[in-house]
Image 1: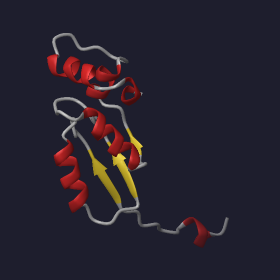
Image 2 (image 1 turned 60 degrees about the vertical axis):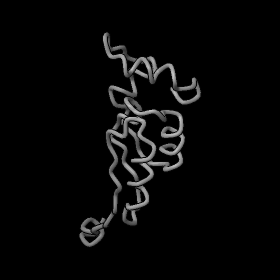
Image 3 (image 1 turned 45 degrees about the vertical axis):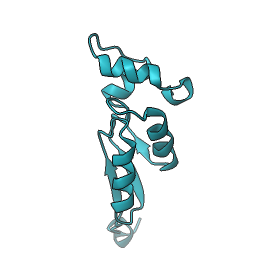
Image 4 (image 1 turned 60 degrees about the horizontal axis):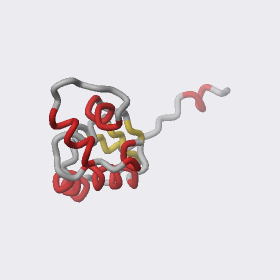
Length: 101
């Protein structure tokens, strides 16, 4: 490989999301205000405290980015349990099976 080919710089504009916690109005506001971007990186906790876990999961999936499963996501999907976390159990019950995957 030629030296010039190895030193090629690439600019990438990433929209980084984190700790949405099923807050649909907040997610919609962030997306409306977000600058132009090439990729979306979701750092976890899509679900959790808020009232709209299914809608937030649907919207996050439409963004088609890279997502990391946070502790709230794991708890609500049944892949990890936290004893005494009522909000996680509550949202786990609100979330449809389709949105737990």
